[in-house]
Image (cartoon, rainbow, N blue to C red; front, top):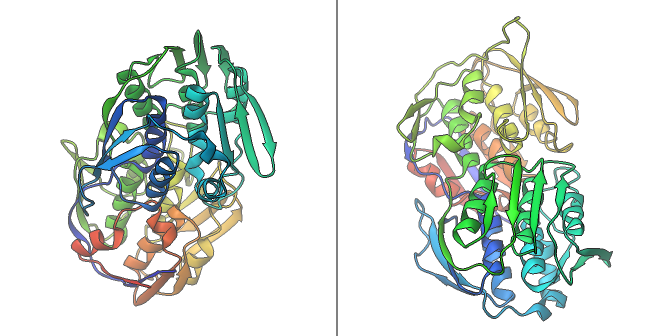
Length: 439
């Protein structure tokens, strides 16, 4: 187990380039299984979850070749060819162990079912942030003609013939939508998905599949129409910048009184992210496709027009992404004013606030979904403490708190942070942070 030792109080300054989008990578990497031809994917982040998925693809027999070595400021380019997939591996203890440790392994099911008529995946792992049911995935597959059986801790999915249909998703699940799309692209007939997730990750997946020969219309909306094709071919696809990293860097700049330019942020794909941080009082300027966060000694949380306390809540796209709720919460601790943070989706995601309270933050945890933050306006700085990262996003929120705190902090279990953020310590050192990795 590794830890970060952080000496807080340094003002970050400089330029930083966001990594390729983690959540998009987990979808499009699985999509390489839909064709026997070569698929080239650019701007792939060097993070634990993505690397684990690449290892799973190799285990299945996918030929993987890396074109560009890993580097701090740029992603990698991979070439995949799934022309010799070994389905017997699905029954192996090694596959069950590796797939069970990765939440993203669930998205192998759609491509395997679509192309080979069968898939097996153990109950997947991932962040412990509350219930994360998989019903949407499997109900959609059953509507397309598959049978799903849960047996000895694994899902067994089979289909002799997949046939398009109309379906109304019970929730706008991003991964569920992606899995159903990948199942439907090779099905016979037309599939219509109502209440589809329309996050940029799904938008990117659909565009990639269309470039491979799929026939998907309504891309970017919550109503998708998929006309099945007989086969798909190869393509080249480039990942978007990770919008969660972009939001994290905005938070880091604000908390450390930093002066940061986020290069090539692809602002058109950020939705409400800049706007929500502006509501928290942070200046975020757009310069072409870059975002600039100037140094601010103080920032003040807005109120609603009637004078009532501001609420920041997550919502399906284009609402505020739940992955940045933890960042918004920690940023509010040093603002002037108060805010209600409402995490609607996951009931365990706010449980990290006890660490912030230990650091001196004024937070009232109302219930598992809501917390009221009383901003300190930097009059009382946070103090360094020792803490443990419970999940990816809370881990980075604690890292942001430590960067702004007085004294020395230590964050244990940083493997959680490494799952989603590429070389985060090295990149922050370049901005002036004092952070050291300790094994």
